[in-house]
Every structure is written in C-alpha cells, then in structure tokens.
Image (cartoon, rainbow, N blue to C red; front, side, top):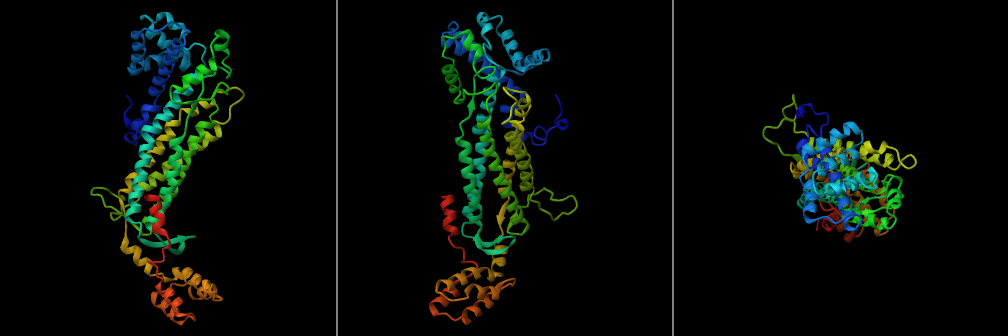
Length: 452
C-alpha cells in the first residue's frame, strides 16, 4: 500500500482525514461497487416485469449479498478483467458472470447487462454518488458552517462598527449585520443545493433504446426506464444521445460554485477584518504563526479556505464548459472529467471545514471597534445633511461636504457645527442626537430578520 507521504493528491494525503467521508462515494472502489449494484438491480428488474424467470427469495438474497458485501478483493477481480478488456463496464459484467457461475442464477448470466450501454450504468452510479454525498456529507457541513455564522451574528447583532466602501470609512453598520448578509446568501444557495433533483438516463447506445426495443418489442421500455430510475429517487431523462445531457448535473455544480464564490467573498472580508483589528483570533497553545516571527497568529483557516474554494471552482467552471459539449452522439472526453467530481467536492469540503474551524477562533475586538468608530464623527455627515434636506434647508449637502470631506472630524467639531447651524431647535436636537454608535439605521432589525 502506498504510504500517505507518497500520495500525489493533497486530498488523499494532507487532507485525507477531512475528505475521507467522500471516498465512500467517489473512490474507484465506490464506483465499481455502485455499478455492480446497478447491474444486479437491472437483472432483478427484468425478473419483476416477467422478461426473465422469477427469482427465488434465496436468489434475491444472494444478489443483495453481492451488492452489500462487495469487497476490495471483488474490486481487484474487476480490475484484473479490465486489464484484459480495457473496458471497465465489460469487466464488471465478466466479474458478475464469474461470481454467479456456480449458483442457481447461472441460467440468467446472459441477461446481465442485457441491451444496455455502459453509460446507462455509469451515469446512474455517478449521479447516486453526487446525490448521496450531498445529503450525507456536504449539506451537514454547510449547515454547520451557516449555524456558526448565525451564532456569531447573534452575539454581535448590535455591535456598531465603521463600514467601508471603496476602502474608505463609510456610515456605520453592525458587525452582526455584515455577517447576516453572508448568512442570507448562503441560506439561499444551500436551499438550491438541497432542493436539486438529479437526472439519470437508461436509453441505450445512442439514446433510442435500439437493442432493447429490437429484442423485446412487447415491453414498454420508456416506462421501464422511468420506473427503474425512479427506484433510486432520480428523475428520468429519456431524450439523450449515448450520454445523458449533463445540464442537470451542471446546475447542481453551478449552485456549489456560487456557494463557494460567496465563501471566497466571506473569507476575504474576514481576512481584512482580522488585518484591520476588527476581529481578534484565539491564541492556541502550541501553534506557531511564523517560523521566524513568534508574535504572529495568522488567519490560516480563512486563507486555506480561499485557496481550496478557488481550486474547486476552477473544476466546476470546467464542468460547465466541457460537459455541455459532446461530439455527435458521444465521445469519451467526458469520462475522465467525470472522474474528478470527487476532487472538486473534496476541495470544497476542505474549505468548508476550514471555515468552520476559523469561525471558532475569531471574536470581535469591541474596544478597537468602538475606539475607531468614535474617532470618526465625519461618518454621520450623511445623516446630518439628510435631516437638513428634509426640512428644506438649501445647500445642506454642500455645507456638510465643506465641513467633512477628506477630514477627520472629532465629536467636539461636530457639536460646534450643530450649535452654529441656522435651524430650529427641534432640528438642532435631532442633529445633536446623532452619533457614530447610534447611527446604524435598521441594522439590528435586518440582522434579526435573517438569524431569527
């Protein structure tokens, strides 16, 4: 067995602990196992419609045993056949013939892979892997990540801070509100991922069920295919070439790509908040931030996530470009690309887990946030000039622009201006009531509408 230090991919080496749950869906072993399942389910389905003899209860149990007890030795046996055939699905057919040769099912061996093309088996197996990995691996991690943002937003829902537009100080917001924006975006993306219904096909060598229809025209093969695929809780697409049009799968990948893009945005913002001292990181005993600078605590979880999200999205983008294109009724260039699904999902998973870990290590530096906020009274100029405009005072914007543009305004400067401006006392009181800490609009209500 290859030592972990000699593995080519970081997903199987450095990040193996994080990506292990995906290997049960996208490893070579899993792909062989799942295709064996499809072949035997197809054989059983032919029996159920009366095309071949009924299976006894013990024979049905035997087929279930082959599926559920599929071993590494079984997978190696298939690979031994493939070295001769140079065709992986034909190798599976030969393996099953060997497996059942000395059983009561021997007379049904000619019906294994009857009338199918390899892609009928491959696409169903791969889409099951996509669906099941989403439900058992990806969605739980994404939900946990969203929940960590929700908890952070709750803790900081009313903590005012300076916003920044164009990299410059802008009117105040709350730290919780800025996280709530990402929560809302991620929830929408999560719901789209969760609701996606996956397509599969069982339509033969060029999509017309030629072999099945020619050999057994008395069977309603369109209905058979639809029901067979529905048995896996998948949606049947009967209009295909040899391969399923991958548009449906790409919509799923696009939803993941959008989620990752949102999280790249989030990672970069958190990185900047840490850099600016808005957020502080926990100091973990024994960890090192720099090989030479002992004082450093680096935002490595967010940096790692950003990098992995980018790698994953590069693959998702390639899927959208490559898998929508196939020469005529089929060329094989899609096959090798489809074998990288686990890679794209693996980098996605590593990133999401790193963000979860990073969220556990950050906290608001309230002293720094409030000190910075109260050092910049110029940021309430928007509110002051809008109050003046509301009472019809001419030149309100220009007046505040003259007082504040390009300047740092202290509280005393602002209050002197309030006392000097020519307005009625009620308006003056409203101007004096403004402060950087209180001028947060509906930020708290907006945050609460997202986090519940």
